Length: 481
Image (cartoon, rainbow, N blue to C red; front, top):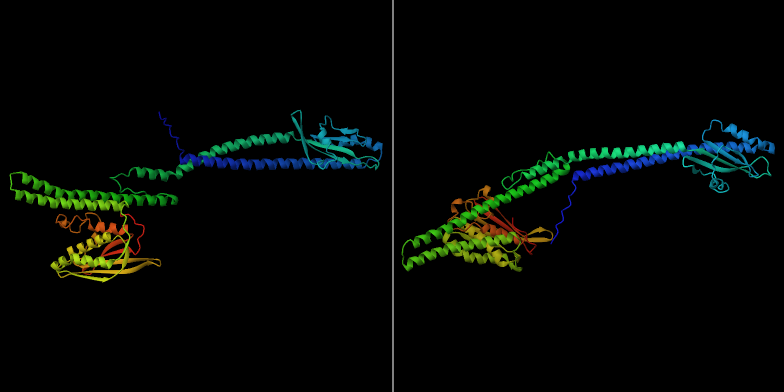
């Protein structure tokens, strides 16, 4: 049995920003507090060393005046006098014979301090504790007497730093309180700032939830969001515009498809029902079947064209690679349509030439659709001119330009942008006139885009012009819109 594990709940952006603010403030306050604590501790040490060094120099000066045992015996009294008013200061003096000449009451000098007297660390501060309550910082040094034959005396000086330690303990407690309080305050302020800063995102989310297939006209307020989110809002609005256009085209396509299929299906049903209404001769049945066959042929062509467009839009059309002159294909199509053009009183003219690499049959179909369209709307006495030329898109790329110009009533400008849509006709009255399903220009554009080219229509003075571009060498195809 498969066990489904519950998905871990993802943390919100507000929570992450709040955590980041709190962590950053904690680190900053800790570093700042530790720097201040180290500075205060160093300041206390400098103060203590200044006092200890001064007292050490005083004792050295007194011992330097000792010239006899009598003078040495007076040293304890001098030490007592010099320590008046110096609370917390302790001194120990050992004479040249190693005997203790003077020692403050309960002088707690440890042996490791005294052993440093002849080492380079002698005058560096040494810290120790007594009974886990009192802390001292002291130094030790030699002090020569006035008698050259006597060895130097040993002087140890220390000061009580318990009050310093109590201050530092209180400082560290205050520091931790400030850090905790600052972390909580910064976290709260960060949460508030994040909530306010992300309010435009929540508004965008609210507006986005209002978007549906029936309400694709909704847009996000670009001017009401911060600059950092403006580009996102514009991109989402562009996406909504494309979706709205796609849904509109899909809706139009579905409606047009229903209309296009309804006519042949209705014709088939009506003719079949009429034929079955009473007994008829075999000739009459044959006539009905021939009429039905024409409608089936129309449906088959429509379905085949729609399948081609669907494949093209999904990149499933892979053109062949054959090099040929596009003018030769136009000439062959002129031969095919020549009789129809002559019957309608339309002249055909070809100018220029240009070689391309592509699918010969597909490109012939595309040009044939343009010529068929031009013949359908060119009045008697008019002309159709096809021009083929080679143009340079860039220093390294060439394309073949083919234009089909036919005389006649110019297409209204409001229809030009939709000429290549499926089932679209400029003249709605021709929808069921038997002139095709309105897929010819859409198929032409799909063929050209599958070759890396494109097509567009424009109007001239008393004429319509369709221009298409095809790279001379086949490129990666792009899907049709």
